[in-house]
Length: 240
Image (cartoon, rainbow, N blue to C red):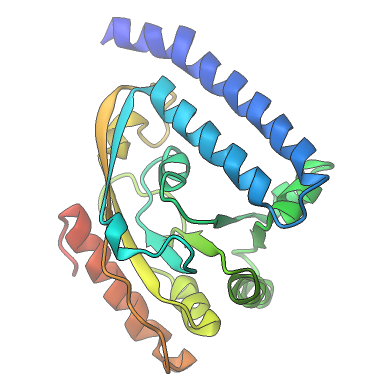
């Protein structure tokens, strides 16, 4: 355990910081020329692969055949670690994220996030949050991109939390399939509240897309519960 911590603190953690800074700078520079975010997404995918390799996370993705590479989806995943974000980027879709609104207020970074097609989320303001979700639905429809949401509202240190309805709302509003995603093993790579990165096998399981065609917004509660059950099945936890 001592050697593992020493390796993490003196080698892996510094590499993660340097890699993230370098690729972040490259992405910010690219955002000045690419207003659709595709170049930034390519850079982010390269960063994700390198980051996971440095971390020793051996990631296997199951169920890619269920997705069309040029399709648009709302991807709904469980959330146990900061490393979930780079892991999801291994899915070969044009992926965008919701990020904390405070990040959009930072000079340069905020403009970069907007140009890359990411969206702010305001958890403490329901009206602003609804506006962001509506904007996300427009982005999905017009640009044909996919959006990732972690509907538990934050990382979970143990079991699967209840899902908030934002992901279901977004999928119905955009008229695209909602796809349950189960991430297994990432908590062992980087536990919540820790900086001790450890090598471990990780599996990303892609569930069957759930069509929202003809679905009304008042069905979002039921869809949210269905998504939670599907994610629970994918990670091997009780759905109730």
